[in-house]
Amino acid sequence: MAVQRRNSEMVDLLAADFQPRYEPQFAWKSAVSQHQVLPGLRGFWPTSSVDTNGDLIDMSGQGNHLTLNGNPWRRGYNLAPTCDLDGVGDYFSHVGGIGSWCDILGSETYILQAWRGLTIGGWFLFDNAAGVEEYMISKWDTGGNERSYRLVRRVAGGIRFSVSDDGTAVDDVDTTSAPAADEWFWACGRYTDNTEEIDIWYNTETANLALAGWGGTLRSNATDFLIGGRHGGATLMTGRFSLAFCCTAALSNAIIGQLFQQTRAMFNV
Image (cartoon, rainbow, N blue to C red; front, top):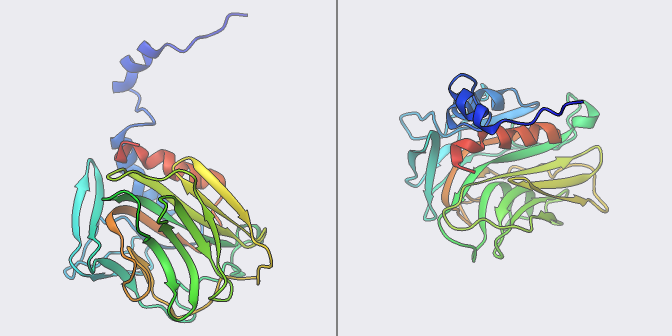
């Protein structure tokens, strides 16, 4: 039987007629819509839409807009909308509250049991190399012992996803690789209630942790939800972000993988 070989030259010749998968224009036109169909979506902030206050507009349709703090800038990177944070008072926040949209337990009964949990993520870039801890997405208050969930860059440089069931005890899962300065990367953290485990993604790298002695749900508290820092405007991020999202569901590996693959061309990754 004859073997059909891939003709790379023919692929290049037909690129003008058949849109390649890895193409910034293809990623750009579908980036918002693919996030809007995520199961359990609570908030999606692409950084493209901005009101007269400079607030971060939620494109999930639920109106969970994030309040501007400091003087972050909006700009583009290639075709991607981005937001700059200078590490000195710049972050976006939403006042927390028991039962608010961001007070996610991960055991919500209106989600099918196998899909119950939490997923947060987006595209990020740090201005500097590692050396200090910087929060990316969080509902986390260390001073009041009201920790819930966070996505953060460690002092050592890797990306960490953390959860707490009582506000004090913390479970972490870390990546081995770490982003360099001025390097765009995709990060995602997932808590799965059904199997009591957490996972983290750094581009295509993944890591997993089984939760030992887990108390059953994420901590319910009134801590604020932040992008670019943690409760009270502490441990701020210096860099840029785009296409950030939060879901009250444990998204599947397939969905998480395609979010990265279908948007990475916008960031030259």
